[in-house]
Amino acid sequence: MCTLEIPKIDLSLPVYHGTSEEVLAKGIGHLEVTALPIGGLNRHAVLTGHRGLPSSELFTRLDEVEVGDIFYIYVLDEVHAYQVDQITTVEPDELENLVAEADKDLVTLVTCTPYAVNSHRLLVRGVRVAYEPEEDPQPENEVTIRPLDFSYLWYYIPGGIAGVALLAVIVVRRRKKRNER
Image (tube, rainbow, N blue to C red; front, side, top):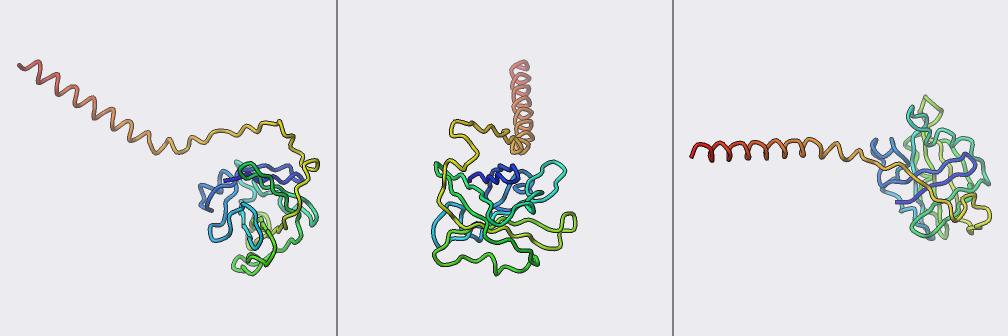
């Protein structure tokens, strides 16, 4: 969908549709009931991520972000800059801070807190600001190489094996019939 970059904590991660465990294990998820992170007034996108997974850092250091810090959303051929204007800790069912506000383009980053307890949610909200290319730490010519995701192949392997086995049975039966004649 897009890429989230938070220079303050040296984070650059892909953002995927949805918030399933599969999505959150490999990157950041977009909360489906909120606006897509494509920018625009009267929009509020919410991006969620795990903290402290053994296999990946993800939002583990999100609590180091401070009001005034900048983060970026790379979507299609655009770069959107957001300045953190609010950091709050809420109960998991408190949703008031996630609604859109008139004439604002907002993105809120959400993770569980405190670390390893996960009883609350840390909300780091950013408001869209003008993108200044010179403050963006990623050079224009830099190529970011991300590992390919082959996890979907596990769904096709059993079908492929069954298909080859079926083909082998058909070939053997035809040869037996031919030899009997």
